[in-house]
Image 1 (cartoon, helix red, strand yellow):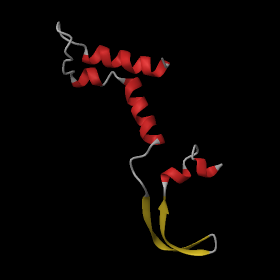
Image 2 (tube, rainbow, N blue to C red; image 1 turned 90 degrees about the vertical axis):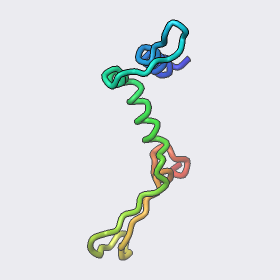
Image 3 (cartoon, rainbow, N blue to C red; image 1 turned 45 degrees about the vertical axis):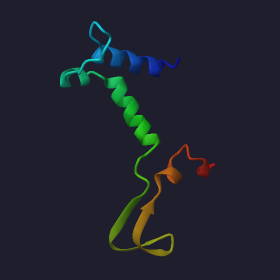
Image 4 (cartoon, one colour; image 1 turned 180 degrees about the horizontal axis):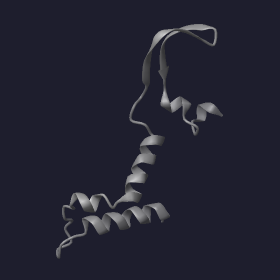
Length: 88
């Protein structure tokens, strides 16, 4: 089993715990704030697998980009991510 998975599982078990019947309880906000490994794992997952399909920006003034007049910019995170197979 992966070390990160084990750490996240241990945090989850510690925070959500369980009652005498093994049912998970509702943690307090303070308890959730101690889940640093879980939060880091979620952030890294969302960084690698973005839920935003594209990012569109309008330029404020005309500019030249690569010899072309730019008026808008569209970025596709899946194509520009360092681990993208499109970059190899």
